[in-house]
Image (cartoon, rainbow, N blue to C red; front, side, top):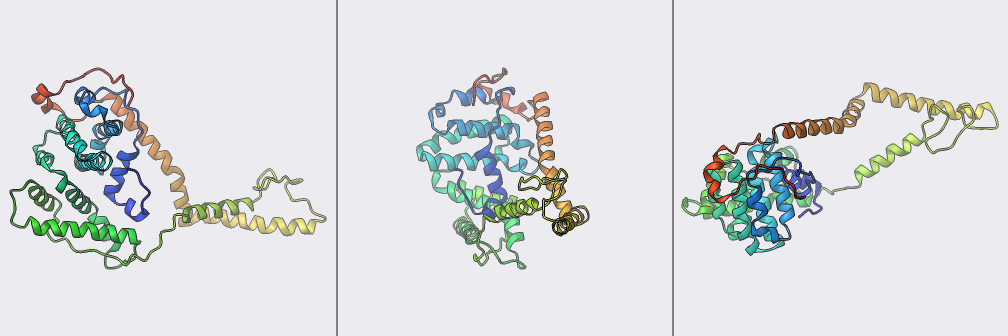
Length: 334
C-alpha cells in the first residue's frame, strides 16, 4: 500500500494519517492488551496475508490515534477507509466482507458512538467513492490554501488528484439529491453536513509544475561542498588534508595568506549569517526539531505505560457477550 507519490499529494492531511498506518513499526507487546485483543487474534482473519498489518493499525489507533491532537476526531474514519481499501486492493471483495465487521468490533470496543454503524453496511460498490469524497473533504482546506486564487501553480499529479476528488463528490451529490434512505447517501449527506461542504467550489490548477525530488539532495551536496572549503581549528581542512601549523604548506607566506584570508572571510560571513539572519534561526530550529519530537514521543510512551487504559471503553462491557476480554499482557509478537 505504500507507494511513491507526488510530494504535493503526499503532504495532504489524509495522506499523512494513512502514511502513519502504513509505516508504523512500534512494538506494543509490552502494553496491556486492549479489550478487543483476543477477539481479533482468534478471528479467522488471522489467516489473511494482511493480518499483521491490520493488527498493527488497530494497535496504533487504539494507543496513539485517539491521542493525536490533529487526527484524533477522525482516526476511526481513517482506520475504516484504510483497512477497507487495503483489503480490496490486496485481496479482493471476499476479504473486504470478512475484515470490515472486525474493524467495527475494534471501534466499538473503544468508541461506542453509533454514528459509525451505518458505515459498515456499505458494499464495495460505494466504498471507494465514499473514501474519495471523505478524503477530499478532509483535504479541502489544505487544497484551497495551496491553489486558491493567488496561487494556481501545481504538479500534474496534484491537479489530477484534486479534480478526481471533486468529480466523485459532484457525481454522488447528484445521485443522492433527495435520497436520504440508501446507506451510502445517508453517509454522504452526513459528511456534507458534518464538514460543512454544502457549497464546495471546484478547485483546479495548471498542473505544469515539475516535481524535483533531487532538490533536497542538491542542497545537501552544496552545503557539504561549502563546508569542505572551511578550515578547521586543528588545521585540518574538510577534505581531510593536514597542514603544517594550521595553514596550507606553500613556498611563501604570501601564498599562505592569500588562501587563509579569503577562507577566514568566508567563515566569518557564514557565522554572521547563522547568528543574526532568519536562515540561522531556521537552521537552529531544524537542528532541534527532531530532538523535541523524540522527547515528546518518549514522554507519550511513558504516559501510556503508566496508564494504558486511558482510552474510553466503559460501554464495551455491555457488548462483552460477543468479544472476549483479556486483561493480561500481550505475549505474542506482532
